[in-house]
Image (cartoon, rainbow, N blue to C red; front, side, top):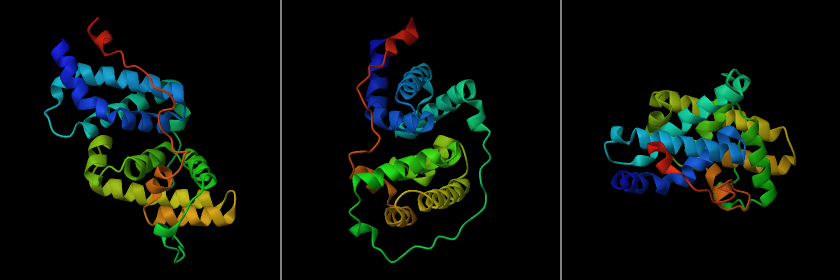
Length: 212
């Protein structure tokens, strides 16, 4: 048992922050995200025999995502029934260079609020690509969808996020953030800001309980 747990921890614990980040964005609650991650890690441990080596991150995040959807069906079913807006909107971006944007904490807070307004399907695809920097192939593996679907969903999600940003708060800040979204540097906004969503407190995974 100890060897199994040791191998499992070596494979999955380096991705604990990513697991929590995805769960936090999908549930939009710190405590619920911790509960989901705990359950996801227990599920992953039970099915560790199905992992055949390689990068454990997509394998783990697929389980986290599935656990999140199970939790949402049980606790927030109406959220899963929100229809996704298929309409495509042309993005009118200025010539502002995103590399030169010095975004303040207020900018990141505005972006965080806009992300939380996105429907679940849009929110998860943005988080996986922009914040966790998963490749299209990895996202396809996590979400169990074709790569073409990943790209089309991501395009729609970005355009929807831009629309939300342009409709709220300081117009100048919203325009700067919209440019960052259009140039696919959304993650950089969070990485350079203190308001980036990350685990708010440490929590212990009780992996041994799966054998009880």
